[in-house]
Amino acid sequence: MRWNTPEDWAISTSPAHPALVSEADFIAAQNIRATRDTAPDRTYLLPGILRCGICGRRMESCWSSHRPAYRCRHGHSSATTPDPNRPRNAYLREDQVLARLPALSIRLALGPGTTPPAVPEIVARLRADRITLTYNPADQTLTADTPRAERIAIS
Image (cartoon, rainbow, N blue to C red; front, side, top):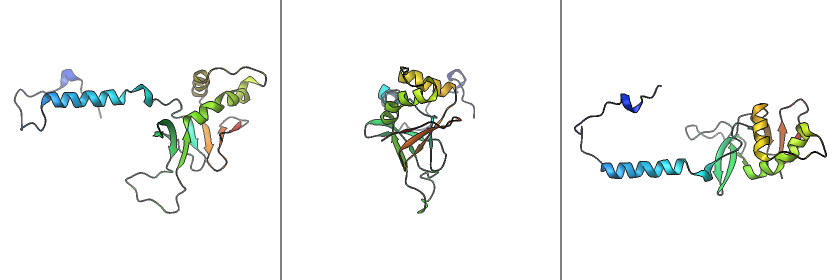
């Protein structure tokens, strides 16, 4: 699919049918939606970095208890009938991961006795090196997909 730019839109000069809402109400609703979508409190630092240790899928960002979090529904969506044998959804709060990233960065490359960089720098390095972290909900650990498979506990 390719989106047309506003310059390419065909806008009728006369209404094709009676309006359901006024133009002012429509614009006001669009502004509310735009404000909500760009709200700074709904940002995630780790999308694409976390994988599920049960099924191997990437964990999706979600909002849980007024905090950023990640979950894996193991392939279930609202369009499919739930399989009774499917494992329970896995949830992981972002703040729990961020608190452990400095320890993981020491194990990944810096070595003991070294001051770890700030969390945003650690996340940037994980992205640059294409390192993903696998979350195992059974023992609440994160394992890096590196040759040494560095592991840290979350709980």
